[in-house]
Length: 68
Figure 1 (cartoon, one colour):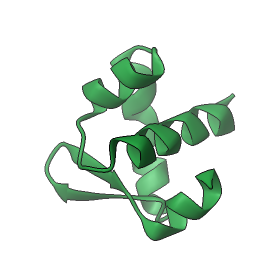
Figure 2 (figure 1 turned 90 degrees about the vertical axis):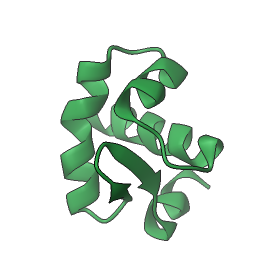
Figure 3 (figure 1 turned 180 degrees about the horizontal axis):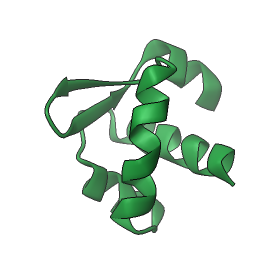
Figure 4 (figure 1 turned 180 degrees about the vertical axis):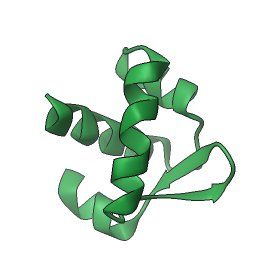
């Protein structure tokens, strides 16, 4: 389940193509914000997303490779 959520988050960020807040990501994939929020730190640790400013997230080139 976590891998499916990770993939959905990465796909949403790829489609948005700009920094987004966890609430916006959650709305895009149709889940509660809390489900997205708890997955962001692990994705960032893996280098799949980055946070250019507090509370905003973008997909990295490495993350894009997983959703192509």
